[in-house]
Image 1 (tube, one colour):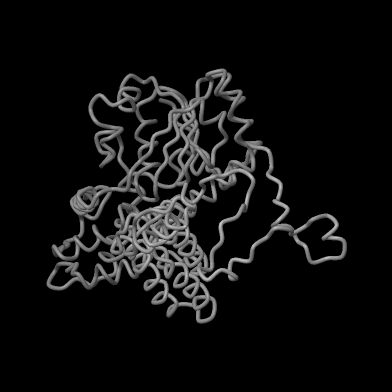
Image 2 (spheres, one colour):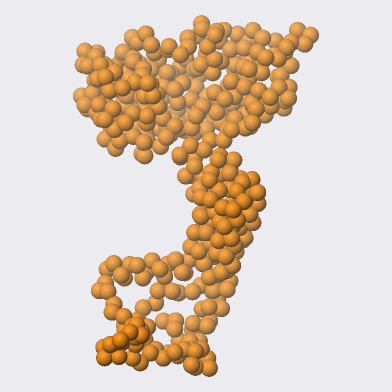
Length: 430
């Protein structure tokens, strides 16, 4: 293996001034914690690495799950030349230089944050990958199916890394506390169970965040009687306020979970995802608009008050803002999640749209046309129309469209059951 001089420019094992998270990066696959779904015995990625048959990869996952660490461990097992660049600071000229060099010797190219390359820069890698001179290992926190061009995806194996479990984080922290060469083993640290559990639970599977909190806590806490007491208070202070992953992927996944929980009549789950969206900084007006859509699409006429309450929550949210608007949103969310559900109105609308697109457009019957202008009578506009309120029942049977269609098919849930019975009585249900 021939390493480029800048491969480990962020840190080396002997650079004790580097952040703990950098110093504790795994040196080989056996030191990688977690990700057994892609690194377990017999799994494709492990087989490729052990046989030195790496092909272009894109490692995708949340911050701190070990993407760059895994990339380092993989390159440590290859005999190819290694070059590392960061997409946030590199441009087309550097890509061109790497591809030119790769024609003389097979090169493994590590690209951190590959999604930051624009389309032209990503296109610049295609020829080298096609020729087989460059093996790409790209890392990104963003879904590559949205952030990486399709031709690059099709030439790469995409591996999704998961957030580390609390057990994984505990193992990483324990290893750092014991390692006297790269970690904090040279410090007499007394780590309380509550403290380590707090770091494990409140870092959301982010090893970098956990190690950073551990390091700052150890280095900033004065020793007492020859040892550093890392208590729950130290852990809380080192971690400060819990942060939430709410990038583009997490945002859309959370919104999806929120809507599906309301639709699925689970108010508890709906409140949790609501709280996460608000904690992540989501625009409360956006949340209110989604609640309005759900009220009409998924509750509909099974409980007409759902749309009224949703509309009120949007209006109140726009007027009073956060944090009080969260209370209003919670009321609307729990009402809609608990309400009987029907999408009959939504489906009826879609059926009508489909007919409008695929069938000949119906003409408005003469009796329904506007007849209040001069000359309308000569054109027989509005003739034959019967005013329903002239009948004691408020209903008269007449033609409202030329072809008989059954778009709205009420369910037997909630208030819609009454609507169904009424339409059946009127003879309007087909």
